[in-house]
Image (cartoon, rainbow over all chains, first blue to last red; front, side):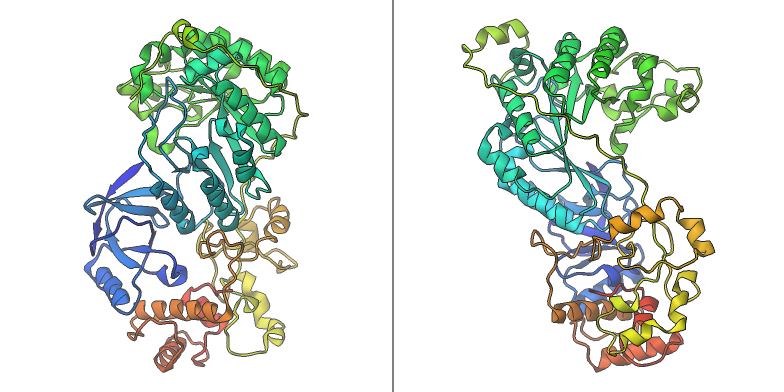
Length: 379
Length: 210
């Protein structure tokens, strides 16, 4: 989440606002929205005050270097900074719906909290209303979004109305879809274009349950996946590659090929070295280059079952070359970084790079520059 | 905060005896998802006559036949989107308003292979990208009066920022708004009618509320 230093012309409530220019406020103004007009000069700030004194109570002046027109922001703390909740120029867009969760995964990048955080639901609805230009893809994440129940449906319905061309991706463990009432409430006659991103960590219940530290989770997730399929919803399965998962990866891929052949895509993801992963380093820290054999075997199994798959968060130097075409530049802009060694690498531009916080944790593999033809030349 | 059970063996030992498993069945595979194409940005004036509900004259149909209006696509009159960046005002053409022959501008900014596929898809959208749409309620069903009020407010905001209007921004189309509009129209060589004509809205850079 981006925090940007900002100065406001009045004391601000921590509500959601859209950043606009003075020239465009006339064309974008609407009574139900709130606006922060970028006004770095005294004259512009005076103009904004004039608008407000003329009756526009939802227009405020903001100054600061780090904003872009179209940003959806919320003033933070003592109103000396603002949180950018949505930025048009980002490659990845996501809204946090809750920080509560019903699993407790060994490598959770965003450890769950218990307090009631339903204000996040209202914030998400506000952000959706304030987005000026529909993104191609919008992620809804958590925590566990299904804990919202019918409120999740409210959000999805608003997206269908406000941004009909946006493809929505919901990150969920799917467990609550094992309850018919939840599945019905969220999925029945759903008009929103949603893809469900669901993690699966084992071909046997105890493996999955161990990774998510929740007995019974496997059965619930499988039931949830079948409920999604029953409602004709597209599913992407996600596997975070930590040690207990890598040890049985080929079997897991075979299980998916045999039992869940309807999934659209399988994402094999390098672990994000943050959150609980730091607490469970022994299980989570792997050098992906050591597991090339397992990855290649799993890829073969998936190909045999015709399950499309991609590698996410994978530096190319940690992946067997035969699998490079399945690698995906997946790390969100604001978390993404490269190290010095990468500058000597011939495939840097095709590479996902590293999470910015790898320094506090670990690198997914020993980073080594590759001096070979670039990916385009291979294709 | 609960603790992790870091050993698989210990975790399994702690599991209660398992209940009967649910039967799982295999459902036939679904078709793969289509990939997103880069969307074309259509070039057209900000507002066409048909968008403008409040032009204050009734001759819409006759207006459409004016020869001057057919030249909008050339960019010689009216408002042309300043950049191909996504913007709420740039909206794919809902009605067949495609010029018979593509102009030079069309070719330079709109890739020819994308244009024909984009049009039928976009034809389903009948409102602006709808940040103004009422939450959850399907499609904004604002009354004509509410739309008029919003449009007047937007015009008043623009006139205010141009220094032509210092009265209350209240959405009421009164004498001061009208005289400010006339001044603007004179400056921009538009007929000084004092009405929110389509050309005036385009010159102001304000999308018509509809």
